[in-house]
Structure formats: C-alpha cells, structure tokens
Image (cartoon, rainbow, N blue to C red):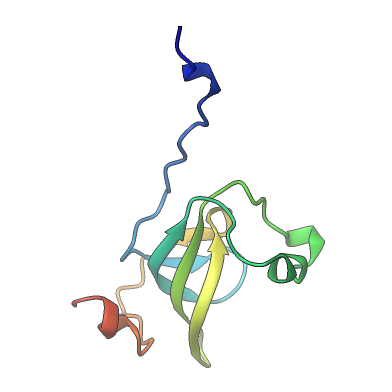
Length: 102
C-alpha cells in the first residue's frame, strides 16, 4: 500500500515567467520574473494588506517588474488578483532587459 493519498496536491501556476499581466483591482501592469507556489513574503507584508482585500495564502504569488502611470517598481501579487494584459506596449521597467531578451 502506498501513501499516495497523503501527498499534497501539486498546484500549477496559471501564469508563467515572462508573461505580461495586469492587476485586477489596482492600475498597474508588469512582467512576471518569479513565482512562489504559495505566499512566501513576510508576515508584516501580509498584515499590511487591508483585511477586506487580503488574498488567500494558499495560491501562487508572482514577482513582477511592474509599472503604473507614475513609476516602475517590483510588485508581489496573488494569482487571484492578476489578469492577462493585452496591451502590446513593452514594460518600461529598467530591470526587464537585465532578465529578459526582447
């Protein structure tokens, strides 16, 4: 008899490294450069999110080279808050060219 029933199910990320996505609520977009299979940031970071919009921890979280109308930055976003971005404009974050080939 095996312990297959005891194995944790493998979560598959919906989005992939290099994909351009946008936030479902907030006005920013970015390119994914890393994925955590579940929440992997600090408790302080998690607690800083207002409880009414705080995402579940048990889902993939994505590291993005992000941009909005005013600046470029690194964002950490739950899968439930991302959508595919159909905007053909390239992401202008300065680190994109250090990691990706256009």
